[in-house]
Amino acid sequence: MKRVLLAVLIATMPALQARADAPITVHLKNHKFTPATIKVKANQPSMIILYNDDDTADEFDSASLKIEKVVPGKNKGNIRVRPLAPGKYPFMGEYHAATAQGVVIAE
Amino acid sequence: MISALIIVFREVIEAGLIVGIVLAATAGVPGRARAVSIGVGAGVLGACLVAAFAGELAGLFQGSGQEVFNAAILLLAVAMLTWHNVWMASHGREMARELKAAGHQVRTGERTLTALSIVVGVAVLREGSEVVLFLYGIGAQGTSAAGMALGGGLGLASGAAVSALMYFGLLTIPAGKLFQVTSGLITLLAAGMAAQAVIFLQNAGWLEFFTNTVWDTSWLLPDDGQGSLGMFGKMLHTLVGYTAAPNGAQLIAYAATIALILVLMRMVNAPGTQAQRPV
Image 1 (cartoon, chains in turn yellow, cyan):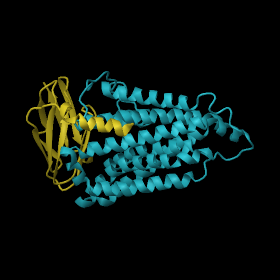
Image 2 (tube, chains in turn green, brown; image 1 turned 180 degrees about the vertical axis):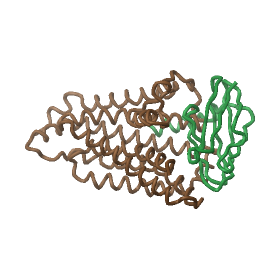
Image 3 (cartoon, one colour; image 1 turned 120 degrees about the vertical axis):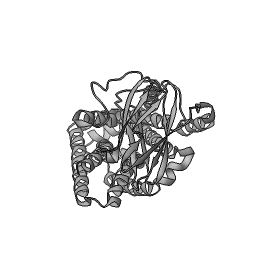
Image 4 (cartoon, helix red, strand yellow; image 1 turned 90 degrees about the vertical axis):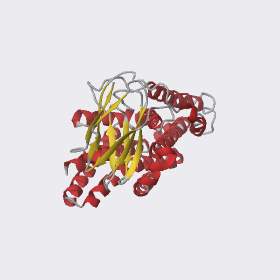
């Protein structure tokens, strides 16, 4: 049952994949996000490409964005952001929350 | 040290609550300790493997390998929990009879031990891989490794303690009622996992309908694990799938899973299929 569901999902994948604007590049270095403030258009999906320039893994974590994405050290992660209502959505690097803080602003 | 404590505590609770429910659901079944131990062991081993190959895993499926992997193991757990509940429902009568008959051990649960072993395994795998990645990062940095190890150890101990409290709390329920309670808990657990799998599929870009937030109770009870209230919300999230700001697809998955399990349980437990069995 679940396998069938997954197969259907894979088959319909291209149709469901929404076209987003150009991805936004964010770097994580010394456990800090640059830029730490990310502006996206409200009500449409967007994509953040996170380059982790540190040697250690970190987790892009945001309860309000519903995203938990581990990005290994010296690696990149594609983070899909669902269409957002206008507002502020804070996020953090969970493994280094003291310094790795940022916010997505949808407008 | 504090951050290590909190992260490890959080991940251990998430896996530990599931282990506690599984242990309570199999109370009195011979061989369950072995099945659960194998599940935990395989989960820890798998978590180390996942952490080691995190880079490769992340690159799969156009950079969404991690989300797809998480969704897949959650759906596997949902399927196993469903099977367990349905199987228990079809053998509920025999079980009740054996319980009444002079304290015989409940052997009927044995058949689904493998399923529950897998559930324990994937729970430990998912939360464990995050802990391994986190702790590896601390080791690699070489800074205050002792403090982090202490924090991690304390987190592990306190997470295990909370899970144990949950388990012993469940055991105070009389044996006859225990199966009803645990099958109810397992149904909600499965529904919550299905809703979580939906999030991962959405983040992988595979599901893009009904993504609007239906309601938001994060002002009342957040589920982000921050602070004691957030931690309570996170526990409820693990146990019954509480989500502060669910979207439409999540609610559909949650309701559909509960409906599916209840319908299947009712079907296999229909009168006539059980009653005529020779004693």
